[in-house]
Length: 186
Image (cartoon, rainbow, N blue to C red):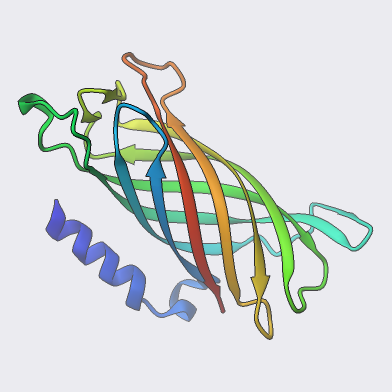
């Protein structure tokens, strides 16, 4: 599995943006906020802008982008048991993200975002204290950040994300992350 993840990560990093009409790349680091598990999350992603203003008002608009990501969760929890000791997870995600932002990106431009997407996990647990019931997970997040640079090509933001299977199958303990996201747009 690690070899597969390495190949996919390399493709994400070095694929020609024009070949796939990719509008940007992202890197995320997250830390679970649970008291009974300590999970670090790392993600690489590609995004495709919708190039539409869904709602426009007073110099602001709601637009969005597709976010395709590949992630790795590393459980550093002291609560691991022999059954759950190999408790790292790989994930693939697809998330449509709605973003409220200024019509004209200049200087430092703030934004807020909201999303609900789909994630597929390589395992249904990340430790004895975090079992997910199924590999299919919903991932929703709220976030805020700023875009900056000559064309607003740089982006740094914070996201609070919850992942769970929405009660489709038990156990459904879910997990929450505090995430810092760095993004570069072409």
